Length: 90
Image 1 (cartoon, rainbow, N blue to C red):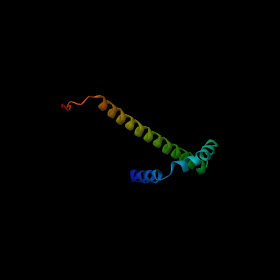
Image 2: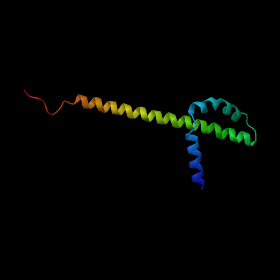
Image 3: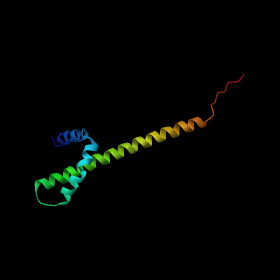
Image 4: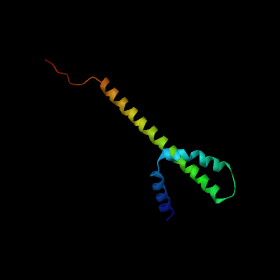
């Protein structure tokens, strides 16, 4: 049951737009830094880390995509450097 709840939360978070979340980053950072013992402070801390989690996830995702593209380009270049085994003879 706990895993299902976490999965549902993750799905909802993944549907959020990073740029909209980034606009809220400063607000929740300030709330988090202004410690008090309220539930509002606790929620602010959770929200702050959710925003950071989405940002980190997107950074890792983009980095991996770029690495794959670089590897594909390197592979294409190395294949172009190999002379073909069959040549046309006239």
